[in-house]
Image 1 (cartoon, rainbow, N blue to C red):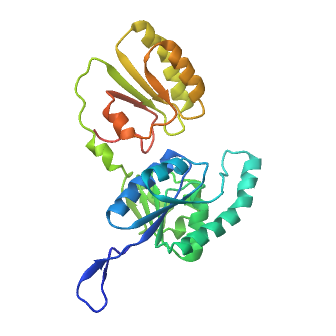
Image 2: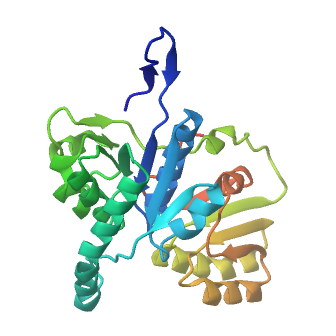
Image 3: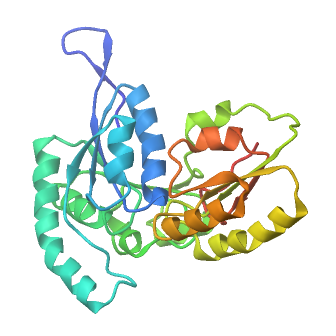
Length: 283
């Protein structure tokens, strides 16, 4: 993307403001990296617009971060059952048309995609409109949408060198995963009388991790160490886990989602996390 343009008839240089559409949603793994990139684009003076669904995590996280968002109606195709997959296929052409109208209405200069079913209609519309597409792929094996549309991508930003094989030569760069600036401002935590443990399985939680933590609660209660436990369990199991945790008498809380994860990291002595591309950073 061009960053500067020379003013006609003058020798001075003015910054070119572009509008970049962020495509990808559903889970935190798609939305949160997009927010990190959006913050950098905004800091450079560019405009950002998200396109997503009202069912995904983008519906709450994007407005909370202060960005505009337009809506499309689309569902997944993988591991959803044949009825939901068929419904998604019926919605796809309508979502592509809707995305194309949005791209043209807002004069989008580029589309930044984090993949997933939410990104598919937007990427297809960008191909029709000949709008450059940049994709972020944190996984060694790109998702289905990114793999199918890889040849149309202007640039792919990947976390693993082996991911280069899925994209055309010269259109891939190993960049790692975007991390929000707030994480780098987390101060070192000194010794405290109470051990604070943060357990997180991602935005939707992780069933195996939730089960392991639940089974550990009686052990903590009987051993009696001074410990404070925070569990981000995801919305599906929140009610049952929160009720059971309250009965243990342990200090802490069970929450479906943590909006301020940098703050949660800053308050934790120990983080127990499901492995993932965006789970770890250097402290």
